[in-house]
Length: 129
Image 1 (cartoon, rainbow, N blue to C red):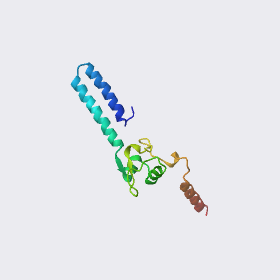
Image 2: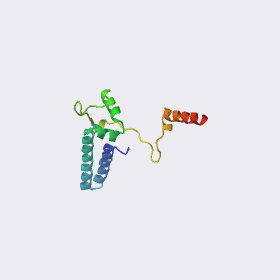
Image 3: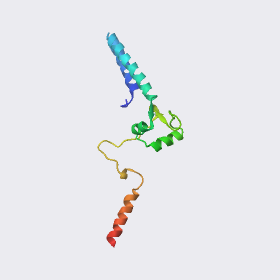
């Protein structure tokens, strides 16, 4: 079960409630089922919650322009108004994050670091003169 999968957790709770019920703990089973139903309802509300562009940038890890392009391409719905876009939380993509303890470096990218190469060439030219 993925870390952020409340519906799967609710399904697990309902299965555990059945076990409780078989053992005669009907009140506890009913409480666990109610919690599972509440979790699913909350999750569905979150998926349809509208967030501002600033919130979407922070949540997704994508830039404003990347989100705007996705919206223009029809990959994301404009949950706001013309001139004041908003996004549905459940539609937002999630940009992969670097592994803990490992900093992202340009060496991880497929593209060369042209600025670094130009600076090293410039430094080499200064030393030669």
